[in-house]
Length: 344
Image 1 (cartoon, helix red, strand yellow):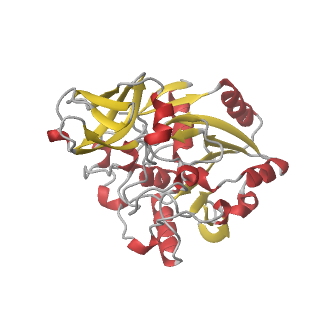
Image 2 (cartoon, helix red, strand yellow; image 1 turned 30 degrees about the vertical axis):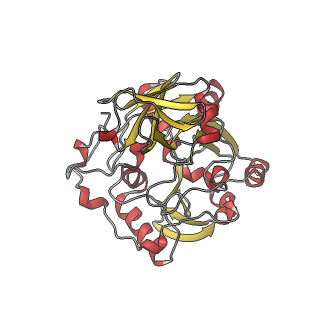
Image 3 (cartoon, one colour; image 1 turned 120 degrees about the vertical axis):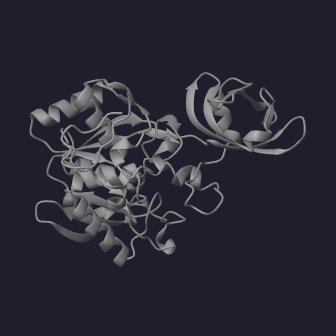
């Protein structure tokens, strides 16, 4: 596990807890992406103000570089049956291991036999080939293409409804390209083509990195000393074009805007390892230094989560807690389909 080297003191899990009314958890997206509310958190003045995401340009440093995560969410939730008994099964794909194989969660795991065919649609079936590692192997080629037809969009567990056809568009950024995530990089959901064009006309530029979000992003920290938390890993890639854009921006003194915690994690992983591709277990919590990211755009995150800790590391725990309290008071919409925050 990679940890910040400049931690000031041990942080307790309880420092990252907060109470959220259930009615503030967004169950559906807004009709128009960029109409989300935007909480503006200024670290220098320690002020918290309200805006709209479509007015994002007003809160960005001039000629800044926005780094977005172009990973695409796959329809990772599969509903099927055991071919021998007809019993119902659910398979949630966690990570593509290459070819026909995925790491997965299966229900009911105890009632699924090793190598027993699990059918999801005619011509689409899989088998549990490694129970301990929970690896399934499909019996067909072009698995990702097949998933587009038979899989369900993996809405987060706090969205208490079944996915529908609209989620295939709504739970995907407009710039998503490379399939591999089982959860959306949600800060990017607020961008529209029109807003991005407007920002470019205003002198800003965009760079795309890829980090495939896995289900570990929802796993709450359970150790009271958060530094003992076994951080999940995620695969990332920074293209040569994106890397050049980041390096050039730094050399020219331009500010780098991380669109989401995933883009932030990619940039800060590179800053530490100088590897433009690989697997990161970087865990950022208060006391960490940020070497590349100057401004962060993010949604609101679950209490006791590593994402809330990352945002607290960037904005300062006290200020971020105050921001969350203000968002709750003002009845912002929370989590994946909710509103956004920018920390400048």
